[in-house]
Image 1 (cartoon, one colour):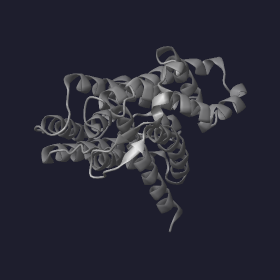
Image 2 (cartoon, rainbow, N blue to C red):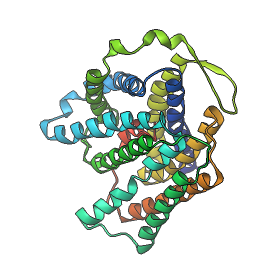
Image 3 (tube, rainbow, N blue to C red):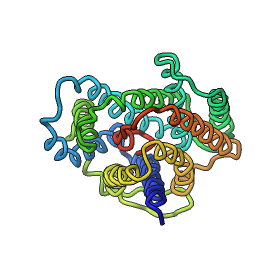
Length: 321
């Protein structure tokens, strides 16, 4: 097996882990935790896991890095995760995921208007298909599934924070190691969450209770196991795996492979949570993901020079969760 094929397998596996995070987080929310508590605990855990790397690289940071890192921390980590978990508590995980994943569209428009980056005409046509697919995914439901106006607003706000994260990602300090580059915004976001959800207010005593899966799999799991999965497996381990895969295939290919996450997330939400989609909704998600993938492919062809991988997008992004 070639090195590139191994990299593809690794990245896809990481995408499965990231896709599981929102589903397992919804299990924790259904088990009695507040969405903000889940987001805070995940940030605390990720920050602690990456703290040694930040400490080791501390001398590499300087004042010029403060602006991009702070913006990334407050919008791309703190706001993004909080909005995502609030959204999935009010709507199907699959719909929240696909809404978040249209973020490359406003990014492409921003780069066109602000930087003059031109894409092929067929890429702009793909944007139209993406919006149409999203409308079908949102409006194609019947009595099946959850969908609230507030959930939709939160999901679109989450998408906006993801777009900001994609814009500011390349502005992160490249000379700092990837783990430290990811850890610094997480630590700042952890401070923000400490103000909103102090550590001592998290109901740690309730983590021994169980939550029952309501999907095709009929089993009860401890609430603490869902939190452990979100922090360790869906964040730290998935982050390490996607770095290894990206090193083999390149960040452009890894980004394209990441478009599988809404599809995997939809399947996991049905399997574990019983969140079944109607046929039009499923078709809309597939069309949207494919169309956004076309736009990302067109943007990747416009990149001149070496790409700087943005590992934080893998760790903090609500879809790569």
